[in-house]
Image (tube, rainbow over all chains, first blue to last red; front, side):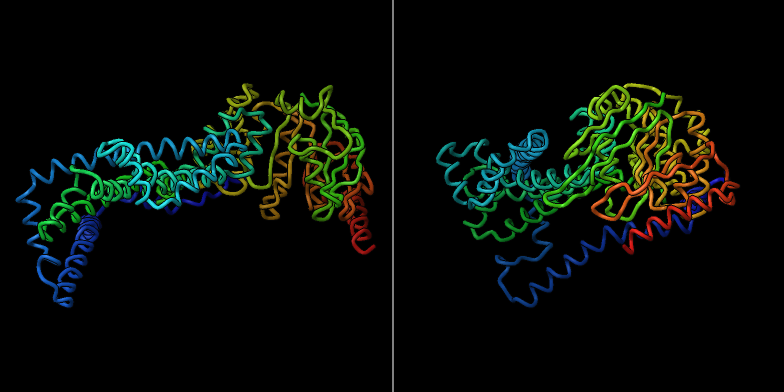
Length: 279
Length: 249
């Protein structure tokens, strides 16, 4: 039998080619552009908004003033930042435990889906303001009330994406597992979960970065700690620059979490691994 | 070790529609049976009933002494689909080992067999890195890795071009002489069926029923010279005539 020709011969050749200085310089420049362009575009839009709106500085301060505040009050902000991170992290963890746990339960025992899904949808559609109020009454200004809000906001995307991912497994692979009389766990861990991984990662990208925003919102309403509280306090004192400083920090943090999860997801995603191998 | 298959009065209905009219067939151990017929005639349905992936409306399937369900539980069956079931994140050799791990039975040494299958040097490649022909050979190796008695194949070479299809078909026939299996082979390709099978089950258009069982009285494995043999030409023409007649009836 003649040798088959593989599809990635050119990719192989490309991998073997040594990196020239020009190529390296081009790569460095490309990376620098990727980092600089979002910053430059945000700054341009910011200045444009100041110029076009004509609003006073306490409503829309200059970017340099915001950075100045961030530096000057770094110790104060950092303390509250830790509190926000704690709430976001615990809430995020619970969102995943609940979301992935329920999706796995639905896969293992399909009737539970009909029993529990209506409750999950109802919970999702209750206005968060009402939930926060109830939690405030129940648990007061505690970490439990805030993390519960973050978990409630995050678990639904995790649940839906994981359910979708677990159903995305190729029927041909599932037939293969059935014909081999594989156990539920073998089918789940070896086929369904790897197929679901890209969807689960997509959910983490939403929930991971969203946890920071929801934690701040919860702190803004019920807390005396955290970045939400700092915003609230700054608003009462007409400190728009401080509000912007915290908003900038929260945005950067959310972006960082998103980028980290995205990069981690790419490493875990078997489809991306195949693409990398192809060069 | 190949096992005989007994298909007794097996039929399948979806609501009011018959997918498969009752079929009776005795298949000897090591026999190669091709199921040919137009789309939707119930070939795949029969294959899936034998695989215990679908329940029949009536009748039963015996594989050796076992029912289809018992045979599946004992891991006596191997399945090869049109779309390869090779796990995309696994290397070829790991995919073959995966079957053995799940089945809890090692039919052969994966590295040795992949080399025999013409895949020496490609054992560590993933599905994306293999050509269609290579991938289908990995798929067949994986399906046979736990040494099943029965191999159920649903248009396994349909995605390949004509030349590759003939080449891999002849290769597969030679492999079966080394590792005998009872084979149920669904195909739309009459020449392929005549080339590979001991007997052809010719199906009518939906609702499917077996209109004739055509024997190919030439020992296997056969080489490409058989395509020029008058018996090949006559059998293929006869089967084609049966299908044409049914289509225009």
